[in-house]
Image 1 (tube, rainbow, N blue to C red):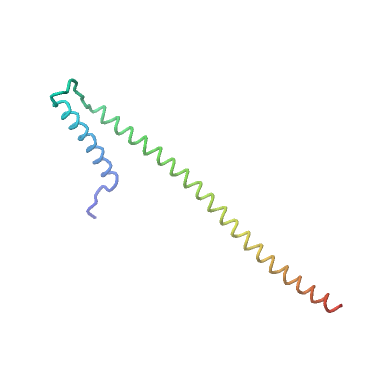
Image 2: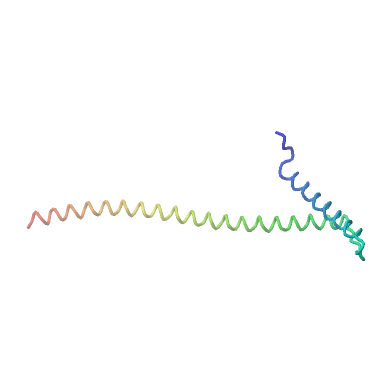
Length: 110
């Protein structure tokens, strides 16, 4: 398996890349002749990036879990309905047989 670390390692690499790109962009902007200010990115900025990522991830995970609960509840209702329909069909079959039998007896008496 050449994918050592998997998804967690890919996320870490992406966060490092984002921070590096932001830092390089800030340095490029500061080196422009028209630039009057300079933006510095500190380790604290990197930690804030990580905190924001974790916060967004947690929020999205919660949304997905809520959707999954809603979907599972809907599926359970469908299963219950399917069972009810099967029971009603069976009951209808039995009652239809009884009705035919009684119709037959009634026709014989006429």
